Image (cartoon, rainbow, N blue to C red; front, side, top):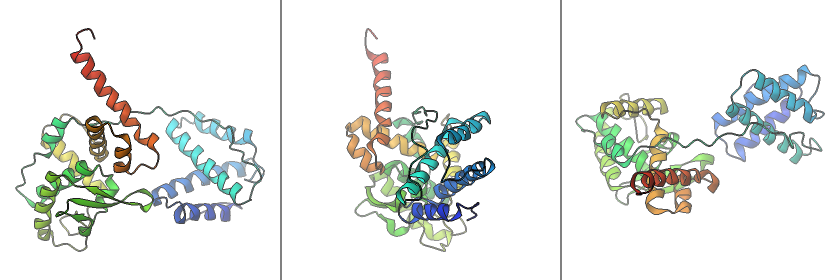
Length: 296
């Protein structure tokens, strides 16, 4: 990686800490690095460094970013990067006080993720498996919805990640944490069909989902194939792979009301992340109420 000015070693140590101890993904580390490069360029321009930067100078940094039209989510991410960085410097005794304390950035509104209804899921999964690619794509959609997988979790699956006899899948989630999740009957059936047909693509590795050249199917290709089937099956919407995860979580919560179980299922460390689905559950209840209550 490329680092800047005399805080080079501190940034390197910080990013190494994120990688080796916090087990952050490479994408996250890259974003943190870009944020810190931008910040160190700014403090260099005003003749400061991380050891003598004042709170007012950091506030001016964010004011400048805001004036450039940076969206609230980007500002919030950069603030999160700096908070983590200065906490690390404080923890390692490189600074004696944290200049980020008390600095506020725009609050992000918690948007409810898009979901598909159970009927829409049934329509999407009703794929005619008349080709190898159709068998693969049906298995992808069924497994992603069945076990509420993240896109990276799905693309990272290997043949030994699934047990179709016991109907479970081993997933390597965020922070390289493994969790074992149940596979539904329909997802298991679709997987069995795909695994039987998989040899027709002349696999070059142990990846569960492969392309026509035998290599692991990329995240972008999975998204493209899901969008293909959304259109092919006549669903009048545009979804992302995460929509299937959100839909599964919402349907589970609506049926069970067990927030803790859904938290564990999704692999959320903090239950507050899962609580967005309680809002979705209320939205569902509200729609039913307005449609059904005689005095609504």
